[in-house]
Amino acid sequence: MKKVAILMGSDSDLPVVSPAAKQLVKLGIEYEAHVLSAHRTPYEVAEFTRNARTNGFGVIIACAGKAAHLAGAIAAQTTLPVIGVPIKSTALDGLDALLSTVQMPQGIPVATVAIDGSANAAILAAQILSVDDEAIAKLLNDMRNEMSKAVLKKDADLGGKID
Image (cartoon, rainbow, N blue to C red; front, side, top):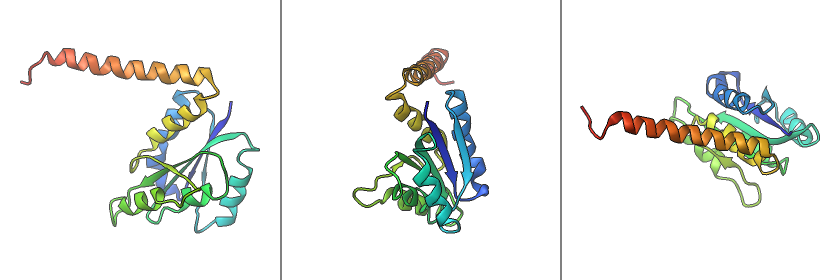
């Protein structure tokens, strides 16, 4: 089974990134997490990324705030799927990170989830890996069924009325 890499630009991103790791563990997907900055450690980002496929990774999740160039810097170095997680900063509430992550030039795509949406990034990574892995596909299907049951239970508990 392919692994997922989770890269974050700073260790201050850990609280936002943690849900991705928890989701991957829940789905039984091996991952590695690293602090690597597009601006402060560009050579290390390039080296990690260029070797990611050889090192058994199938998807890279890149989490960064403010200028948020990490996902794009990674995508420029690999043809593996890259999922960007823009992180909310204090200045522009993450809009700067969102725009930096989503506005990629043609030919260098980055899939992008919501601001601080690392759990969805992990689920998207699992969906990508599930193309060739029936066990992950089944776990994802089971997870969807459980979500559906939970919503239907809440509907039944509501009983059609709001008190």
